[in-house]
Structure formats: C-alpha cells, structure tokens
Length: 475
Image (cartoon, rainbow, N blue to C red; front, side, top):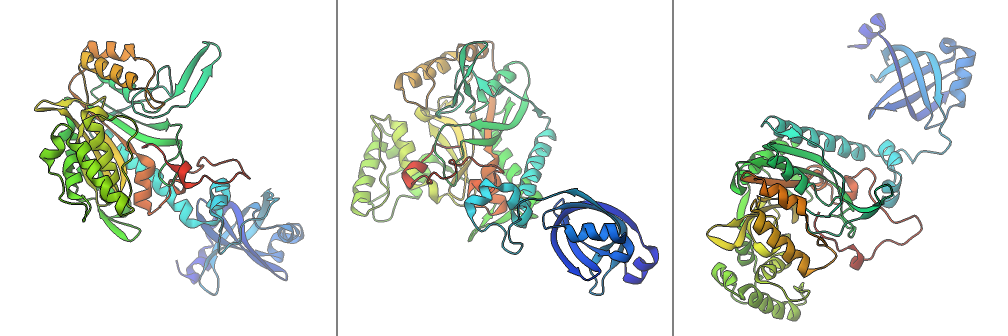
C-alpha cells in the first residue's frame, strides 16, 4: 500500500516485541521491535502518547519488551512503520544484548547462550526454523505412505539396538539400573511382530561417547520399519525421500555445502568391497579385487598392505584392536580409506555379517548381510537393512557379540526380544536417519553444535577436549 493510501486508511495494529534499536530525537523517537524473527520500526511522539507515555519511552533500554497500539504509516524513506498511540511496558532486560551488527562473535558463547545467539544472529534462527521444516517434511513423507508415528521407551532394562556405550541411571522404586536408549530399534521391531506393518518414531538417542563436529551425546533420529519389504525397497525409497526433502527445503535437489554442490537427485550405489577398491590410495600398489577381499583372510592381507604404504607415507593408519574377524577387517579398511571420500550422496551396501548383528544374511553369501548406509559429505546419514527375523540365529549372534565383550556391546541377552521374534516377525526392512546431520547438510552447517539448540558442553572454565578426546562412535 502506497504512503498516501496508508495515511488515509490508517490501519490499526497492536503488537509486542523486544527493542533492538532505539534513538531519541527531542520530543520524538524511533525504535525497532523484534518478534517471531521479524523487525518493525515504531515511531513515538510525545504529543501523541502523552507525558507519561513519553517518559516511559525515554527510560527504555535495548532488550526491553514493550507493547504498542497505533496505526501503520510509511516514513519519508518509505519504511513501513507503526505510529504509536499507546505504549505499554512488559519486561526489563537487566543485562545488555550483543552488539547489533556482529552478534556473538565467540563461538562457544553462541552455544552456551543460545538465547542471545537467536536474538542477535539471523542465520542461527533460520537454521532452527529450517530444522523444524525438515522434521515436518519427513513426517509428511511417511504419513503419506501409511506409516504410524509411535513412541517407545527412552529407558531400557537392556542396552541394545546398536553398538555404543550407554548412559546408566537407577530407578529407585524398582531398584534396577536402566539405560538411556542408544536406539529404539528393538522396540519398534516388537511392534511389527504385533501387526504394526509401517511405523516410525522421531526422538532422542543417547550414547556415552566423545564430542566432535559430527557427534553429540544426545541426538535426534528418525527410525522407521516397513513389513514385507527388504533393503533394496528401502534403497529405492531413500532416493525418493532425500530428493523430496531437499526440493522442499532448498527449492532444488542440488544443495550447496561448503565448496561442494551436493546433488540429492541421484545416489551412487557401491558395495562396501567396491568402495574399498574404488578409493584404494594411488601409490599403495595394485588395489585388491572384490574377489580378493571376499576370500578368507583377504581383507586382513589388504589392510596389512595398505598399512605398510600408510606408515611410509604418513597417511592414516588402519589400527586394529585385538583379533578381528574377516568382516571386521573389511569394515576397518573401509572406514580408513573410503568413508571420507563419499562426498556425493552414496548408498553403501552389503556389509559383513560380523559388523551387522541385527541384519539378515544374503542367501547367496552368508558372509554378507542385506544392510546399507547412506553417506553424504563423508558423513554417515542413515543406516538400514533387511531385519533378521530368525530367533535362533538372532540369539546366536547376540551371544557371540556378548562373548566378544567391550563397553559398547550388551552385557546380557535380551530374552524378551528373542521371544518376540519366536512369535513371528514378518519380513521387514528398517532404517534410522540422523536428523542433526541431515540438517547440517541442508543448512550448510559444518558442526553438529550449530544445528542443536543446546549442545552438550564442558562446564564453564574447563578446557575444551583435545583431538584425542573427540573421537566418537557413529551416531
């Protein structure tokens, strides 16, 4: 509406917000109010609001909350503003706001005082608004396909569903230790036994591990299960899902992430062994073939050959912990030489059985499972597989995992889960998607702390972790 039309119509408005700019000019003054991520200029004149109202205006500081009633008009510069007729004091800011042009320059303060970061840094607010839109799009995608959203326990009597070190708590009334969940997987699969053929959950997982740019001790996952499907069905579904979410959020399947343009409109598919062969370092000798990696002891021999080159060339060394099975050597070699090379969206599939205790084995090759992960920008974004639904085989794998020991495996057998499988779980495929990392990619954020409103931090005054302390398990 043009200025003359506004002057004639004088549309009335009432609004409230925080003062983020303020200037007095004799018997009048301007201020900007901020609320819901928007700013509007207000004009206060003594002759209009009266002596008491103008005295109040003169006493205000940046950060104070006020309410105003008046009408819209345009200033001589054309800025849409509110001509204040009444002014109301709502709340006092006793501490100053960050400098308006630069916001919080100290990165740690941005994480510790997110409330100030959101006030002063528009990009931060946009990141978290985008995160909420991503979650809405994910819900929309699954609800349109007949999935039911559910909630499962956050405290588990047995830590399971993933390989990770859990947080332990104690329930006083029951006098038992419980574990904050590391994954909702086993409970969601119980629901497929109960006849919920398509279920999903968006909620928190907790893993008592390190903190880094890609890891936070608590993080948000979307986990879903579809009966009468297998891992190839989910690979196809993921191509649709990621393209649709990127299009909805960025307006295109192509998204800028740092210096790279990621294309969610297509996903390369590589088996884990193919990825090792493809990204075998130049100069490290002839790459092993897929057949060599599949042979007994082949992955270990390939790793030893790689390590000889890595030591001589000061490259990352594939350090094994203890005696590894063939499949574990394959996983170690992949993580060392190929994982960070998967920049464009890539579906990595056919994982060794030894590192996939909950996945169904491939009928034609029991050394491999029907499992896949999705990598983007060198980060694991999703993990899915055809679910193991044979109770005897699941019990055998659980017991083998417990026997290997370590802080990141369950200490006891989940008998109830085995019993649930014995009642008959239909052929099912399931997957978990990391909401935090997906948000990083779609907002061009390069630390997980930038996409979590209140990330876990060391207590104030304590030094940050060194590089050695930042190693962490997969989210």
